[in-house]
Image 1 (tube, rainbow, N blue to C red):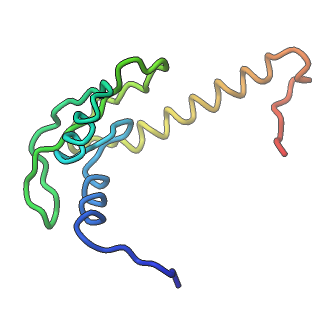
Image 2 (image 1 turned 90 degrees about the horizontal axis):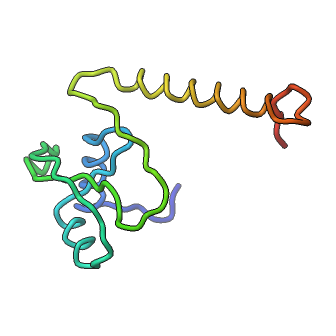
Length: 119
């Protein structure tokens, strides 16, 4: 049994934002956008548009797409439309990434042609 249970608007909103989000995207609310922009740290935001949030109605939501000066490339979000089987697309990407990692570890000098089993 947990010692603490969180309930309320913040938890419900976070759950709804997650369930209406998309892979490789950071879905944020208007209040989050206002907070990020007030920091004046160079956060880049795109408007997602009107989003139905169960129990809250329709709200304007946004994508956090980057930050000025962030040195690493971010994953490119998939071009997903409502109803697309995005889980299959993500699973395929994961399989390709594992295959590439396996190939790179086997091609490394001194690897004995096998991928490490780990600790």
